[in-house]
Length: 240
View (cartoon, one colour):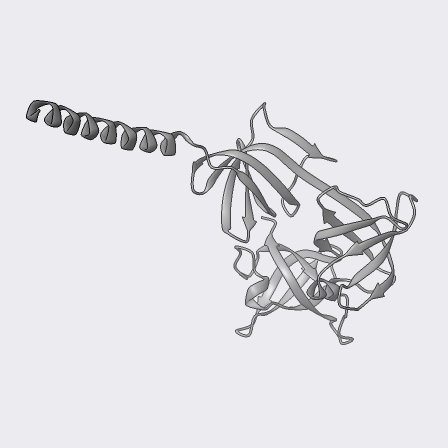
């Protein structure tokens, strides 16, 4: 009887160890999966780095990656990466890269509990309602051309509706010629014109405001009428 109890106890220990080992191996072998949206800040040899709400992530693109893009993604584009494997916490193996945009002219802005604006696309496809957050409205004003990044999903309503992931309105590209301690810089644009750019810290996406650096800045369309003209930066990336 005693021998039988010892055998049962030993067997239970073995089964417990086997179960722990199986769970450990299963956890190690299970690939992290999900989807992240962010702005591309750098192109790499086998993919790109992008800035997300969870920080910087590096994306590996392979022959098996399914692109759902209108063109080759570039620095400054906002993309959604669907992944089923992560080499480590910061490197994702992409299954799909989604980058959908709609460019047109803002015709009307509606500020209510669920704000939106109406967009007349450049392709002549008809007015589209763009649902957005209240903070995104600072990027648009009636009459300007904007590019809306979205998931690719569009309702069948009249007018059709999309939900913005990011709105690129007025963009200034040039070289920094002078800086101030308060985050203000002088920017020489590609056409030779000089403007003053007010750059809050939250607008900087992994870049420093160094003299001589080339940058691309999305700015508020509300320009301050002065000489030179003054703009409020919404986000800034390096183009060097």
